[in-house]
Length: 397
Image (tube, rainbow, N blue to C red; front, top):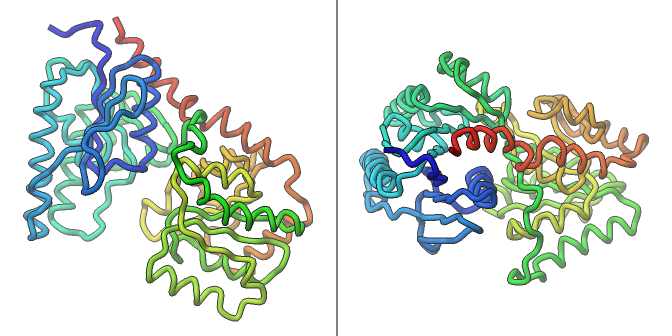
């Protein structure tokens, strides 16, 4: 018999859980609301097996023995089977009332019956497309989509992403659907005393120097590479002296080669600074000191063409004016709130220079508060999670 007072939630994310905001944020917020939450994913070397994330929230990382198998195809199949077996065992042991699954592999769990579970939430992130076209990926996608029918509620990061899902399974339009963007929590803590604040000194000094010289600062964070449009913004900024560009992203061989090619022969190479990323909890301390946030993807896959990048919402939260392409998942909201400039999805250096000229002429006065207001009223994770909280409460007693 199901316990009607059971407020336990199990969240499965078949991935290494470190800095992926949606599962971490939903677990944290549910814990604050009094639910007992278990967030379960994979473990990789060097990270703890158990971790308390906040009130009522325990993060558990599975050790999967089959991940050490050398042959790729056999390893993937065995990891999948081992994950499902362990996930089923854990769910039966914990006896949650609510089950939330993220990504393709975890979605498969919806097809299994768990006596204690009253409500299943299938939370989609990336579009399930085959990257290599392997038989394993094709079958995984096929059965992942089939498992959607067993979920009670489908959750997508954007309305477009929901539409893409409905193409794969038209039946989901008859389900309860929620849209929860990949945004951060409004109450995410700032810099912790346990973190080395010296990591902030170089990026903050660069931004403050730009402000003192009367130049606008553009920030680019996250994955680096030409597929993210960075060579074009590098060339544009390094060719003029009224903007600076601060890049925070992991340095790697391909990126360093692309960076050198983009900045060579530049008139003002000192206006572009590429630094290693700071810990996530420090990011807002840097972003809020800038003026403009740049984000765009080349769109060579469906996931990048219709992406909902977390950095976009981080920029808004910090009060940055958004510089992005016309395919942006919240482009209409940015235009309506007058806190962003959209450029064509096919763009070059001259395109960005025209946009930057416009910003110099019109200015971005008041944009900081408009961005903050838009984030707080529409995209803060707590705000977006209200429909899910209401749905959970309906089953509380």
